[in-house]
Image (cartoon, rainbow, N blue to C red; front, side):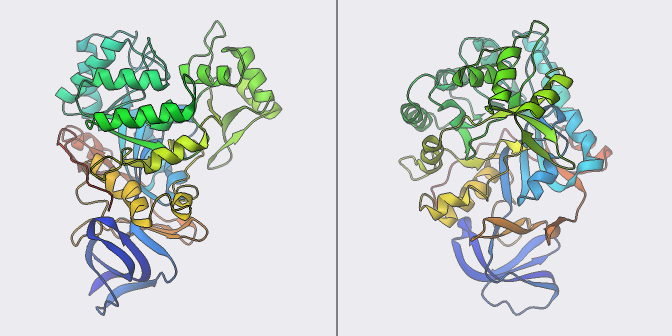
Length: 468
């Protein structure tokens, strides 16, 4: 007697070379069997005829902290079929504190941001300051740390030291490329790869460095692809939305605080200060992230300007800054061994309203840029490997029954399950809480909060697998 039997879906599991209509049986939260016309009995049988079923979608770059817009990130992800997410900045305590009220049952890993003026006082912290931040973050339940170099840069040699220090602690480390010398552009990416010096590193959203800031955008894309091919120690993702995410905060002197926002303002011909943001909002080029009543949305124009001014500029924001061709090329580029140059498709979404893995990512399949198994590999199997989640990202017998079911025609999610438990069902979220992916150092802290902990070792080496 199985707990759950999912019938007649088009099942896509690239690791096990499944790409056909069949059934999936679940027992005790694990995959029990996958095959055609399974005959065993089950407590519940669900017919998914006409729908696609793949291992649960894993978004390898999101934002769940209020400083990026709202506490609604988990809900916004789950409503778009995501079952697991890697938060790329925290703040850690804010994200964890929000779970009792805003958690919807998804798995989340959290990287604490390691950037001035927030977790470091200056852009040149000592190694001791780095170790203190990393140790505390891991103990409190973080999977590791992220350098927000594009927004709040450190000095180049300090950035390199922080990467090495995090790896010494067997922490997960990611970097939004950029330092005090080079910004969030192709030069910053080149610098970040050099500063990583062959050590494993998650380099965030490759498309963000291919916007044409230094060279034509497709020339930057070619440079980025070549750089990644030559540096297999770099794992990465790119997103398919034209929108970015940033902060519109200005300092006491009226200068924009985030370097990324400055880049965007400059790109659209505005000054990098309060006056520039004001004009960009009125021109419909800048957007404010606002609370639309249980979810985040974007606003521009006079209403957005009023909201920004009432918040004294301290709000999340967005620009339509990502050109389309680099996003397409980065999604399909392959190494000589057949593996993807960019390992995963992400959104950089969460509480920033661009959770478009299905609504835009599946368009890559319809355009014959990716096959359906390749889409599943980039949205589930590869990011699971990046997070060292051996039991997720595939439908092998004994694997966690994390599943996303969607309508290929409409590119909309229809249901999701985590360990066989319904998360998204009939258009509603039907679960609460969160499971936190952390290191052994944070297990106790997470369990004290009443959450389940999945312990992984970010220091474990992983190898890419060819496109399946």
